[in-house]
Length: 327
Image (cartoon, rainbow, N blue to C red; front, side, top):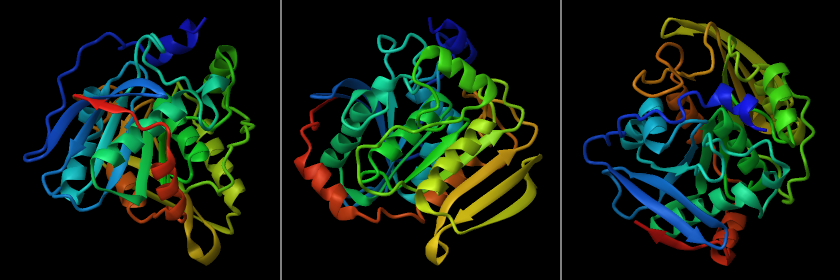
C-alpha cells in the first residue's frame, strides 16, 4: 500500500490553508480541463500587465498534501510573475487519483509521453496556450517533492513543449516504478534508470534545489536529476559557488555545455529539511530562510528558450488533447 510513502509527504493532506491572494491587479482564476486526457482542476494566474501579448508560462506542480492555493502562497510565485510579466498555471492532483494528492511519479503508468499524468498536465498546458497569448518558446515547468519529480518527467517526455524545468526536493525520472521502490528511493536515494522518453529531441535544462537535512526525500535524489540531465546533453564544464542568503548557507554547482550554455544548476541549501527555500511560512513545506528558490527558478527560466519552437507549435496545433476549459 501507499501509506508508508504518503504518510511522509502528506501529513497535512487534509489541513485547510488560506487561499492565495493575488498581487494587486493580477487575477487568480479557477478552471478545469476536461478532454481526451481526462479531467483536472487548475488555477491560472494572469498578471495585470497581460494585454494579449505573448508572455512566458510557468506550470507549477504542488507537493503531497498541498493544493494550488497553498503552493502559490508558500512559493510566492504569483507575486514574482506579476513583477516579471508571466502567466502561471497551478494544476491540482485529485484525491481520487491519489488520496494524499501526490502526483504519481513512482508509477510506471505515469512515466511516458502521451499517457497518464504527463499527458494530462501537458493537456492543461496546451489549454492555457489556447486561451491566452503564450510564447511557445518560453513554457516552463517546476514543482516540489512529488511535484518536482513529476516536473522532471514532464520535461523529459515533452521537451518540445517545455523549455526548462525546476525541481525542488524531488527525484529523477525512473527513480521508482512501484510503491516499494518509491519508499526506498526516497529513503536512500535512487540510482535512476530513466525509461525511453518517446521524443527524439534532447532533454531540457534544469534547476534543482534541495535541503541537505531533508529526511523525507534523500538529497542524493537531486544529484540524480542533475546527472540525468547533463548525461543526456553532454556537459563540458562545471563550476562551484558557496555563499549565504537569508541566514542559510548554500552550495551552487553550475554545469555548462557547448558555447557555455547552462544545462543544469544544482543548489544545496544547508541546514534545511523538506521545504521550499526562501518561502512564505503561511504555506506548507516552506523554509523562510535561504536563497529564494522561486526567484532563482524564474531567473533561470527566463534565460532559456525552447530550441525547437517549431516542434512546440506543431504539438499545439495538432494536439488531440485540447479539451474544454470549465470555470
